[in-house]
Image 1 (spheres, one colour):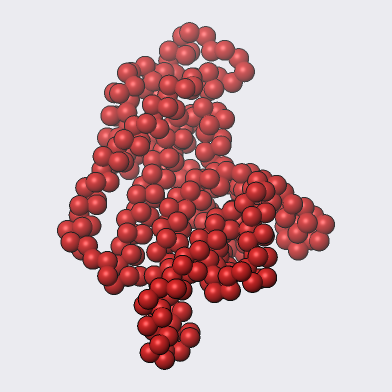
Image 2: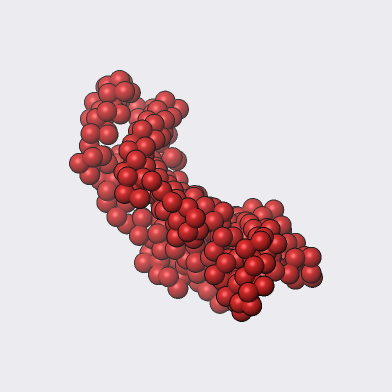
Length: 307
């Protein structure tokens, strides 16, 4: 196991460098940060040259990337165009988005897996058909439509929640935004769990456990569910980074100042340091989540061993 973890960590290095290099090139090549910094008015050549020199934009792109990566390993993600260090923006944004992601993941695990197990065990029955139809509708409706409808109904019409979230963004305030963020993924988790349960229910090891006279609950939890969760864990693990990076729409609807909000502002203002810094951390989140998912395989299925 130890050798496998070391090998995976070494494999993450070129992936991290390649992903950050691609993002850095895309952000720097596709837009003019100085034009976005000057606003509607065009900067005069002297001011533009001074700003480029101040932010290091007068150097070749490869040299800019090498300088940026050297600073990243020291904990310096650069300075935004408003003079605020990017690490300060991260310190205020990431805790909010992490709480939002935790709420969304809890919804996926509790509701998605529970509905998947129930429908998988009752495949072809009315409850199975009803859940499939509901999940299909949830997948088909865009997230911003779901968010606006829940905000209108629960916040404005019925008054059950506040239409927007406060700056603290507590777990209680993030329940509805978390449900909106997790809605599509929750539907996929339900359908994926249902399919996996329905397939493994006919496996030989399940029939053997039933023939041995084991209680139905133990057969489901100890034998059927553990093996069926492997594809579900894979999806949820990769979905962690997707939820954190893809929360732009949800955070805009509920006025949450998290990672999605900062990325939106950075893209809108062509603030390269902010965008590249946040995406760099999200790349690390993806890599660590994938590593943890691979290690969980051995916990769920004892037949899997890493050398």
